[in-house]
Image 1 (tube, rainbow, N blue to C red):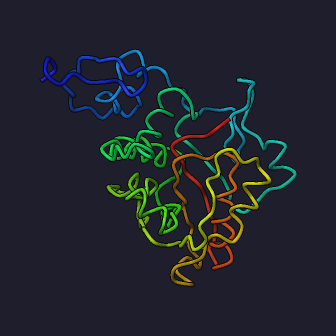
Image 2: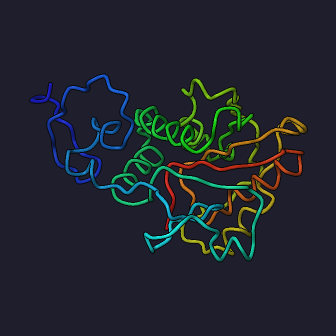
Length: 245
């Protein structure tokens, strides 16, 4: 099979020999994404580690010290309580996210979802979350793409510590322009009033975890969190595959 159908690395594009996958409990990028990246590119990713902002999860340039609030979160705390991510949005992780999102490589979703679930179990103790919900797409964007990548990441989740995955907790009723290329203020204006609750009261008194592929400025998850808190949610946290610097 390797002779006829060798692997083509999503990172560098080179052909590589796909090694037989062994049953292992190890969950890291290199092991989980081995069928899609050559050995060199498997190492080309950066995990999100401390020190980072204890709220928005942005990684500080200085690699010394403890977690603490960044200047922006001190000035404007926002709606969600805290956000965490698997890795920095660059190199091979960026290639994997873009392949899923823009090239419709939905076969990546279970592997990326496994990384995300590992991060969820690391950052949230059992019983700390009631509802897990993806950031929704507008129906027109969904028809064009054919899937919501944020939902695919959690579609196969099992053993979520009592939390329930809710696919349609939120609606995206206003079709906004893509956030790519917009600055922080433009993103906030662009996404304003784009979301609503599908069934009012569903999140009341619940601790909600929003799931998305990438967190950049946080404008999208902020808008979602405000809607959930207005519906009565007890707390809103955020988990993404990648965190932009």
